[in-house]
Amino acid sequence: MAEYTGATQVAQTYYNSSDALQFYFNIWGGEDIHVGIYDNDSEPIADASRRTVSRMLDMLPPLDADSTVIDFGAGFGGAARQIVNRTGCRVVCLNLSEKQNELNREKNREAGLDDRIEVIDGTFEDVPKPDASFDVVWSEDSILHASDREKVIREANRVLKPGGSFIFTDPMQREDCDEKVLQPIYDRIHLDSLATFSYYRDTACANGFEEVAIEDLTEHLARHYNRVRENLLARKDDIVKIASPEYVENMLKGLQHWVDGGRSGYLAWGILHFRKRSA
Image (cartoon, rainbow, N blue to C red):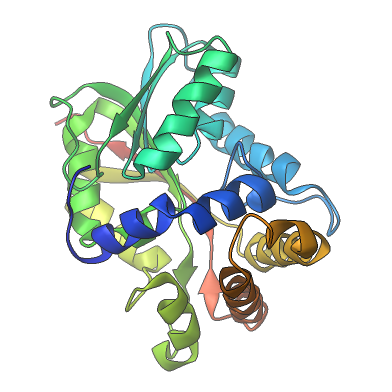
């Protein structure tokens, strides 16, 4: 097992834990553990999560069997399987949780996609791939966990071919938000800050990218965390049999902080699409 430091090491330890594995696979949606785009407040989490992937794919130039994508922080690989099923391209899933990666590989074999999807243990702050290897760098709700977010953006630029796309989502905070009001959220995810739309725009443009499109979809953030919390409450009696009661209670409190932060206008979320400059 690779050893990391700082926020990266905290994220690896957390996502490798049995409690987290059971929660994200059974409650968050299993195949795709990222924020969804919802048609209504009662929609299944998995359906909304797949809609996010579809929305992001629609924003990209067409992909085909010769295209290559790398997913930074791929989780259980749900997005990768959806991308391959729709486009036929090849996807590399880069993820620091070895436990999640084992399940990702199993799901790929079951789906008959293990010849199109490669799963590698690693961090997006030091991508184990050569320069100019990919047409698309993809990431959903993962960069917030990086020890050095600018380094992630530089690595995305390095591994992209000229003209390639960097498209991602990430939970963020509003530009004028008093960080003190978000302290309960920082405490839950063991971070001292979140990025902002302007941070990602400015940092990407300073590191070899040009902006293609930024969609502010913040309304879906609180809705998503509320759906996850409702799902956890509805299945609490079953989940405490496979995850610790303390973890479940802390998760319920933590999810409520995200709901409150989103509804109060302190948080932000959306899709950010940049293109690597050709020269």
